[in-house]
Image (cartoon, rainbow, N blue to C red):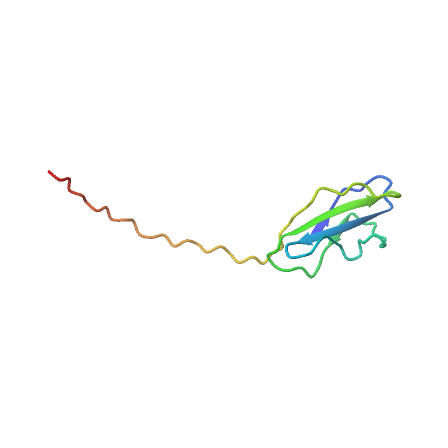
Length: 101
């Protein structure tokens, strides 16, 4: 999954976290933890499950503390099964009704 963000003036590095259903809580992105020195404004998250929605947040480090967290991004990975194409049924044949007399 490829994510990118706008550079923050004065940022010395960026930190990022992710979450998906089934995880106990947010986790640091590999190489983007508080003790890492990640300076790029793009990131590729590898080894993800197919057809899964992931949530991401990023913050700039401009000293202490870090900037507020970004808005969440929530892309879904590829590999979802194709939706089945509905098979059209034939045109229904009207059933004539006779009104009682």
